[in-house]
Image (cartoon, rainbow, N blue to C red; front, side, top):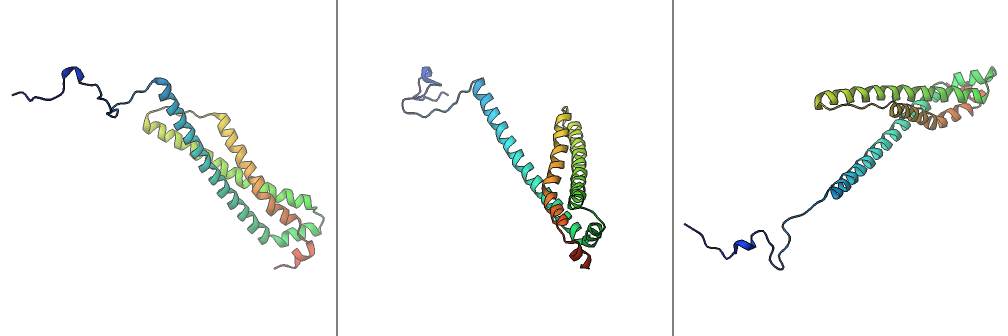
Length: 168
């Protein structure tokens, strides 16, 4: 049994006048361009997430340091009363903030390396760990400590020794 159609066999695969395309063509350059655009989008998304993470971490460090300054007000007053300069107090609290952020950065780097190794083993693809990226991550964590630790350190260094010694 044969079904008759009004389609001529020579017209198979061709579009009629006014008919919309039902196919698309792509060359390698377009595919590479789409891949590059996708990569740029992912990089921007990653940068946004990293920025938010740095802000949250920095605010956490600042809050910890403000509590530390508040709890150690008498100690700061005593140190200033026996001759510590404002610069000494500032450097003490900045050093603590940087140490805190570097410990956090080191923990983050170790977790990142462990995660890369686990996903590499599960996904059966090579993990590429660049020492320069690890160094940059460690440097950024120290910079976050300096930036967000400066306000509490400055607050501690500007305390009046007499008022600080009177506080309970």
